[in-house]
Image (cartoon, rainbow, N blue to C red; front, side, top):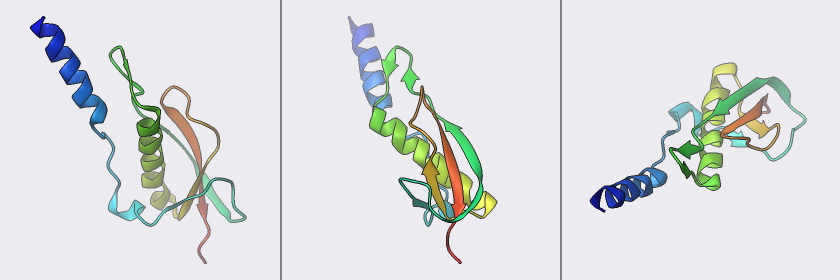
Length: 102
C-alpha cells in the first residue's frame, strides 16, 4: 500500500515539474502562429518526454516545453521569431526560424 502511495506521489510531483528552461538569449524571440514574410533562417526539430513511465504528461506542458526549446534554438542561427510547422506529435515538433527585425 505504501509503495502505491509513494509511486503515485512521485508521478504527481514529476508531472508538475518543468524540465526545460529558457536561455537568456531566447527571451526576446517571438512566437508567431503562422509563417511571416521574413527571412527564413532554418528549421529546428525539438522533442521532450511526453510520457513518464505509464503517466501521460499534460499536453499544455509538453507544448510549452517544445516552444521553449524552439525559442532556445533561434538565436543560434540569428533568428528573432519562430513559427510551428505542424502540431506536436508524441513529444516532438518542427519549427521554422525567422529573422524579421531589420
